[in-house]
Image (cartoon, rainbow over all chains, first blue to last red; front, side, top):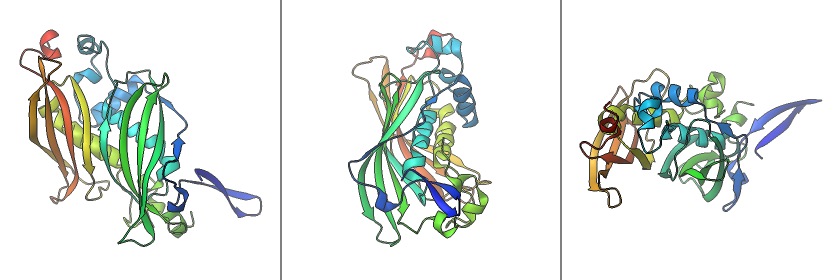
Length: 172
Length: 122
């Protein structure tokens, strides 16, 4: 389901990731692995790459005067990493990401924190306009190693039915 | 940690409906939000969250993005008397004017004299 070794010839196997529409079930929870420890390099380089110059993310002297006492991880990076962690299971066969909603950040993330993610399937429906595809909504939660929830969001994706992924068209 | 080949494998992407690699929408979101920071949130205490993040059009490598933000709501914080909550809608557009992203973002913003900048004599 998540990762498959497809037999493509005698003694020959090819790795394949992600789910087709038929592989999702409402209410299932997928725990994603591996986790990731966020480094100062991740935080500083991503923040500046994305045109964000808020000193709370990379000026330790400034951050020491804030209520956090030290630099906090850019929440766009937290969102991107937690969403990225979910891809190999829920969306590596996606046709397209359709959007997010209800993104909340209940607790700060600091350099050196380790994040894990899990996703619950909220809804599944067939697409009216694209008969070989459907729309799946999930709720993904990011937590630190001590169990503290740091982010949650709902994400909606366009998912192909079995045999109708780009992987199938490309004989991937 | 995203290994979706549509973002970085041109041969795979050529077989998709997009025909070429698609920019990761997490990157688009981060850049469009980042573009707004120097104006709306560089004195923020914290980012509170996003709602209604929509992706009406794809972004490709080589596209040029611009962003703009409209102030939707502003209120004082009940629990933090030196701060308030501002909500904005940010729109990202491509070079041809088409909208490729929009979202609402809520932020905890300090009153004059109460930013970390003021405490830190920044």
